[in-house]
Image 1 (tube, helix red, strand yellow):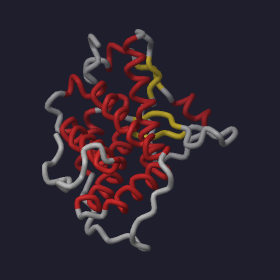
Image 2: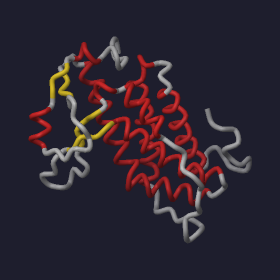
Image 3: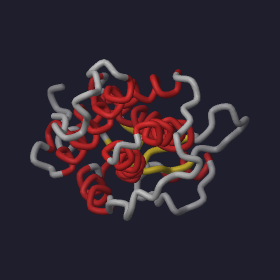
Image 4: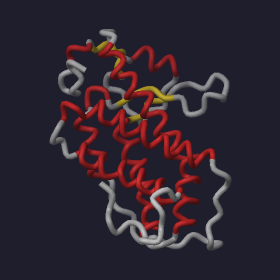
Length: 218
């Protein structure tokens, strides 16, 4: 639900900034609720839906002409809200499959995949979105849109895209009744090559992870 104090009464619901801000706030609220763990059985499909909807807003920002803020220098938004609790909650919730293999730039030839974490990605996305939302709530609409567009290209967009791919893969493995190649015990701090990933990845059957991740009977 949108914060009733989020928008000026003079702004139209059809306004681009209002729609982007609503999408951003909706994602933050929904993701924070999922992290509480009250409904773990629906966590993965719900995250898949929320990331998909957020990327629609990101696509609109990406297709929009370059947004220029009113001020030459970015206004300080104050202390950044801590996302460590969110990160830790998702890490515990997604423990069996938190780590996945990611290629940062598909246009870089022979780029080896690296391990990443869904929990880290979700926390990073929320941090980026909250930063822009602080500008928006302070009435700096152009600065908020500029930040969301800039960080869509530079960080939260690629991060959300990679996370969506990982979540979609999880659901697809369960729906298609296929074994899932998991990164068993890999650490994202390690500098691993593609051969390392292939050698160290363990095999985890769907029946061992579908229940804890709430994907039985999807």
